[in-house]
Image 1 (spheres, rainbow, N blue to C red):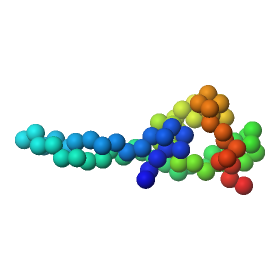
Image 2 (cartoon, rainbow, N blue to C red; image 1 turned 45 degrees about the vertical axis):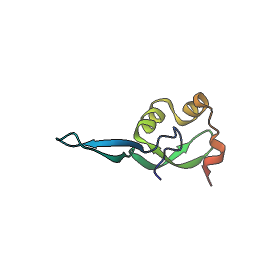
Image 3 (cartoon, rainbow, N blue to C red; image 1 turned 180 degrees about the vertical axis):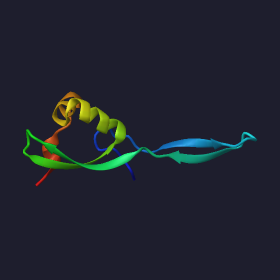
Length: 80
């Protein structure tokens, strides 16, 4: 299942509503991208699946600062 490893964002259940107002269940999937990010502090790459919303936040703040702010340990994710 597509899931963001940083934020935990995953698919949501929604209804498809027709013109006659018939409701049919469907899934809304997040935009999950697989990225390899270089982390200078760890001297290594991290391969991670994250949503584009999380990617925007990581790009703005930096991965280490974002992880520190949200209480995530990056040492487990190092790709060596």
